[in-house]
Length: 583
Image 1 (spheres, rainbow, N blue to C red):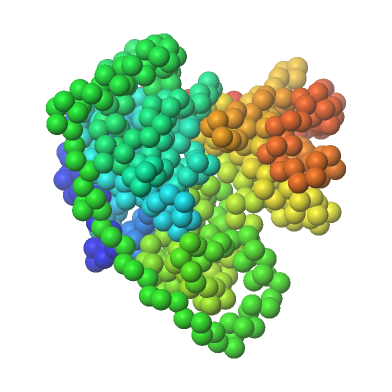
Image 2 (image 1 turned 90 degrees about the vertical axis):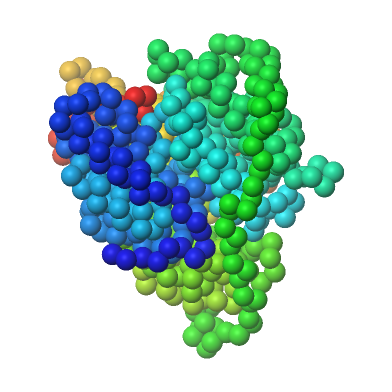
């Protein structure tokens, strides 16, 4: 495959990285380095072990979620040749491939390099992908486009030895405005765009995180000028490198440094390190390294007869209502493509590559909700774009609504997963999309957020959902049943992250019914104008437990099928291996 370098975005890949990976793999195969040393190394190169022997997960970094047509073509080729025809979008705007034999990893990396994308520091104890609101610059009129600053941070930290041999992983997110659209409050560094006295900058929070012991981030700077953001970020990374727990990887994230030191001592350490960075001269913010996106052509108002006919169809109107919004730039619209559980095929990636240039600004952006976004689509071209998306299976309505469920990979591939979370997510979506009796309830509750994880570790971000679920097991006599713990009323507000309350456990095969009942409860008992987030935050544990008690009940007379995980025909067994998240 020969691809032209992206005309829109500079490269993040470097062929030398792949040469080094191949050389290190050779050393491992010759017995020159231990399996543990090689495991730590390959994780820093985005190659992650699965529960199945002999195959790997490959994670590709897409900084700020931005992909050029060349990158999408490369991603499509890898999916086609080594990814069984598809990839998955993650909640950190990456793309992942599963079940890739180690013998094929080099070839996949070479193709990715042709598209300018890299797997470097996508896993392991590194600074992970820097995430950003996909609508930065087109839905942030009150602040400014934060994406170029995210790219500058990425380039500052990528391949920096001092930033990528850390006690544990380190995550950074940039949001456009005060509602923290990129979930900065659950990241090690959260940057929310602000303008103070005409100066661009950020509200900077630190030490947020989820997993089994979630932590809301604390404020480091109420305002740090954009010119100083690299130095402020460096200070946080260096404090983590110095004080993070290298003995117990399960207590090694930055949030544990905060808890051990206490808030004031922790913030003092950050301020002292920031002063030290400045005294060494700091690092100038250079946005010149960020390739400017082309100015889109001015929108036209012409529409064909076919377009006008499309505009009158119910399917088009439903899609336009849920999957598009008007940009700050007059005449332009941003478009979301909904992907069931983040699943995207090789052919769909190629379609997106073509449509990004034909209809948009030449880029496609992944979202933290596991979807894709196209921007700068002239409003009058929406019908034509819809027709092409529909032909590729990409015009499914409901993006960002209650039926658009977020999940982690679960027991399909992850060593740590207890249950098949993707199957539960699919069952919820199918119920909400297909049950005509629930149509009115679903419409009323469309803003409800549902997230599912296959274990308590929160890769599916269940803690910050209105209705969050994590996989677990319940014993009934000598049998085990796959169940899901309900986390109720999580989300984001003016104070940052709000973590859901653990209420009740429901068998996997009854979760869709539990969701239907909870949404019906909202429809019946909401106050005038009350949003789902507010309702589920105030709903009592007692009322919800009573509502779902019969679903939660298990005994010796419970039908056999309830003891099967979704998608399985054999009795449920917990099979947890050695996870590599804390390697």
